[in-house]
Image 1 (cartoon, rainbow, N blue to C red):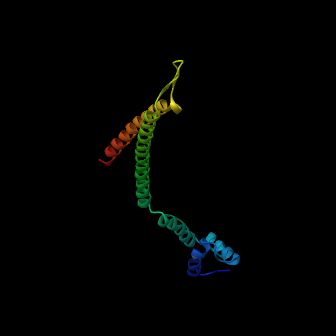
Image 2 (cartoon, protein in one colour):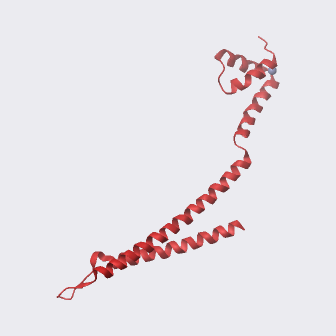
Image 3 (cartoon, helix red, strand yellow):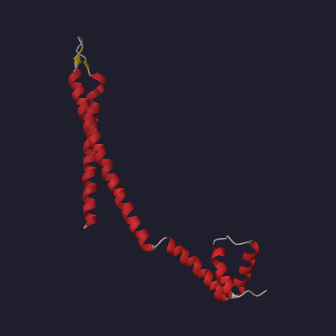
Length: 145
Ligand SMILES: [Zn+2]
């Protein structure tokens, strides 16, 4: 059965989207196998759709934006860590001074809730996050140039 190429070309998008009936699919496949022109048309449809759905420029721009966003997230994270650790260290030291150190009659030092070591731990976290933040910001400035 010979179908005109024009009819096949009209049906190719339906065939590509797999929305035509089984009979139509078989007819199109049969025709495409024998007709290089229509096979070419189907190939064009496949590659054309793939290209138009995600343009290369768009992908690159999206990658750049997502990379910048990721860096912003890291900077925001280190900034948050700085703020929280500084605040936590301050709370530790202030509450340590409010509660005070108790010296037992036998000379033992009683520290409330080990606030000092925790406070210093937060100081260390603060310093590390400050350094990280500084490094990331410098890296970002270098990339921006
Ligand atoms: Zn044909």
